[in-house]
Image (tube, rainbow, N blue to C red; front, side):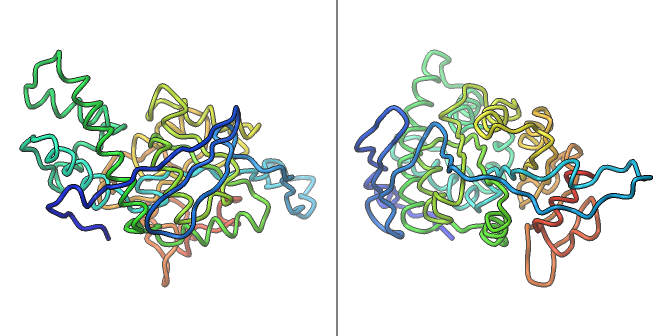
Length: 316
């Protein structure tokens, strides 16, 4: 777990360095801690050339009209990042925001409860703008100040990521491994910026764990707008009924639903009480020893999210 420290310089000393770029390729180097993560990946597609076979199901009863996994096979699972794949909000982003405020000489500090309320606004820059308006900053200064604060916050959060302070949520790595083994495509659709999303994914899972990664740097409109999901499906070359989204928040569920995707919500302390009525199931974790709590949906999901469970949800 990251800890909030008094010296903001300790949060970030070396931002992600982009050292070469081609039309479809970005090379990057992550100085500092964490596993070696100098790597090459395609920003535009993040896609590997592999097929997506699906294990054949037994021949359906000819008298049955119920859809089966053969009718609608699961081709892909699309993950959100913040709060879904990783615990990043309370002890990550919040800490970096506060350090950026302090460095700018602003006497602002977001406590745990206040930050939870601010999370209803997606996108860090937009969140800062909302807060500055509430603090009666001159309207002419808000846009530029929010952009400056957000750049500094992003550098500081990237440093936290490189230090290994962020943890994957229980069951996330195992589910991704299972999906890859079953030849189900894995993708990411997040409103977070690529400057920290790509290093985080690389450190926690390895970038080769995902075929497509679309971030807030790739789209103009953020969740709950479905743009990031439309873009992800386009890069995957799939229809919405061939994939399932996994989200943690009301904004994310709304975005997935608006894109035509079935969505499972895996809540955290900030999102447990949000309106997740658009999700087909709501759990308190992807998986956990002893099982998870099914807050809404198929009781059999108490054993956690598995490839078989997600395949059932496609045709439910």
